[in-house]
Image (cartoon, rainbow, N blue to C red; front, side, top):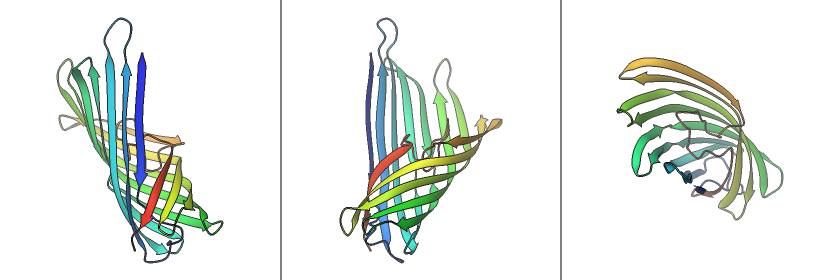
Amino acid sequence: MKKQFLILMIVLISSVTYAQKGSWYIGGVAGYGTNTTEPTTGTKSTTTSWAFGPEIGTFLKNDIQLGFILGLNGSTDKNDDKKISEFSGFSPTIYVRKFKKVTDNFSLFSGLYFNYLSGEETNFTPTEVKVKGSGFGINLGIGMAYALSPRFTAVGQYGLLGYSSITYKQNDTETSKVSDFNVGVNTVGSSSFVQGNGSGAVFNIGLYYTFK
């Protein structure tokens, strides 16, 4: 039997109404998921993952955002109650978004995201082995924003294009270098080993808040 549970929440960035030069916003993304497989015979396997990405930014112009995301994420794999692997990642991201106002409350935008990618995966069976990865990612995303009030706005984002380059090391010795180009990716970057904001969602919806 396969069970799935996922919570994805993006909170606190800016309102279209207050989208003016010099205004500041705070926000972030948080996600949690677990997947359990229980065969009729054999070993139960469970994968748990989480992500947290606090965010801050400002409007350089009335229609241009400059922001920073501190991306943290991790995952754990277990067979029954025995841990077989775990992962932790760090991916700070700088982005620029360009808005196009359609109505007083509704806008479209495109964004360019630059992120540093770093992570460590530990496999515990049959012996403990650690693999580290580091590199960079560049992603293009599109989205829409709808003002719910003068300071709150609902925002939907879609990752359109993405490129990442990651170098892997084991015991401080380089083992490989992997480059990926994807169509339809996470808006702040992703890869098979080091994940950008960790939400794992190609399309996500959030709530944004402006404090100045």
